[in-house]
Length: 138
Ligand code: DAT
Ligand code: MG
Image 1: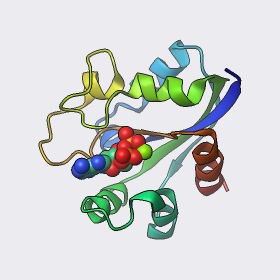
Image 2 (image 1 turned 120 degrees about the vertical axis):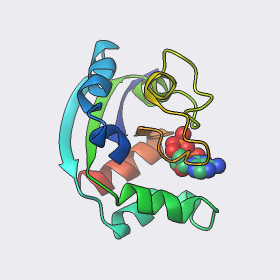
Image 3 (image 1 turned 30 degrees about the vertical axis):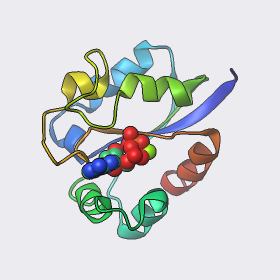
Image 4 (image 1 turned 90 degrees about the vertical axis):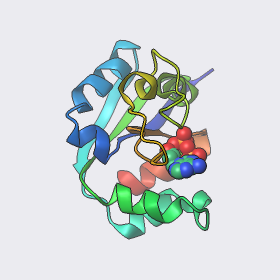
């Protein structure tokens, strides 16, 4: 396992619910190092690049609309194995079933079909991390 960088987004639901500090604190408490941070009002072009793997899926358009609905906090975190490590901290995609102890499991509400309101995004591979960091921290 090597020192890596990953992109973490606190999505509009996390920011509007006042959970940004609590979420970032968990990541820092794990020992990952905050290397960059900003509040971003995303635009459609950024989101089309960010979610390019999901274009055409049924949840794609609601997902993009949701990500446009309010400010997002974008962070770069560094650490040994931080890419998989953060996804482990975040928990399963659906907050309804995410395990207790994870960010989505503890803070995520049972939104039924609104799976996109799951508080956080984390890159899923070193290639995704570099690509996504280039979008959010261009
Ligand atoms: P993750 O964010 O856990 O990496 P993903 O990359 O598969 O999940 O999907 C991106 C986002 O799209 C996810 O955070 C929430 C939304 N999403 C995924 N699957 C969905 C589904 N079946 N219905 C509604 N939204 C979904
Ligand atoms: Mg993903």
